[in-house]
Length: 420
Image (cartoon, rainbow, N blue to C red):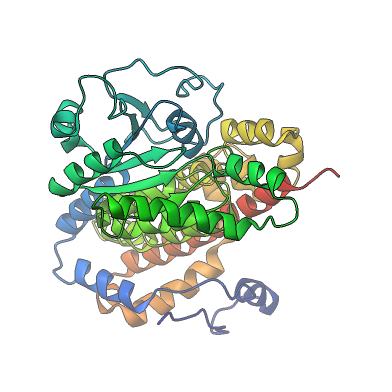
């Protein structure tokens, strides 16, 4: 259960300032689980070890490699899917080549444009000459992939079934993607003008895929219906939730953060994923502050805040390059998207001077977090400098994340807004 911010008049602050801070009921103080984690991190008393351990853990989370293998016959939409899930158009530099006959016999890696540790691999189709299921996985070095996506724009064939069985035997995850369902729906709408029902047709396609896979010996296959030209429709969010649940814990974060900002549910997922690590950054700041080296804590706090602000802005697609890409994709001028942005964290250059300015405005809120944290985390009570540093970092990161996430929602809504 979360403990929410309560109004406290023990500080010599103006009533209206406190009311403004407390008016956002979505702001949560430290959760019970976070309290346990923080106490566990600090209770041993070896602050140098705490700093090193937290630093290492945060780096592992941020740099966790994620390799996704995409396979299927030529024309199944592999390249378009790889581009779409990286948030790219087919004509952008670095995009996977589409609309050509497949000739490659080697896996081709496509690195995420913002997260170089995330790679999508375009694998040669299983039906390619000289590639049979029995030796295919070894040929494409299957051990390097976290999971496989097997794509088809029609029914799944025996080659797809044989490959799935081999992947299963090697204890790897695989998912079936039935692509181009938008084309099927359009064709049905033309042919069945009087009886056309989208949900019924989608169910028919899904049931047919599952039956064929069942008949081939695949028990309980996970089949997702997608349109790579409009990734947000149909089963994309269901697929996203499934992958999130089934990925190893240390891979979930980078998977969520690297998703394209195409819907409000994805933006909310990113907000929650980033929020989970605020306590770690704050505890790191606290541990550094307790080390008696003049100026070290201030430098650490500012460094943490600058890094977080840039990371948040990038994750939500609000940096210059991402905004220009979104504007081009939705046929709007980038100035239209910028017009709904309210946070200076998005508009201004993120540097030391901006952070110091924002810190001076957040004193009241930071003190409220300090009081709460010190009363609930016994170790902080004996570390005055650490407590202040913890509270300041925690409050500021929460504020940064909220501002940037809220702007991302406004920008997406503006991008999707019809001119008609």
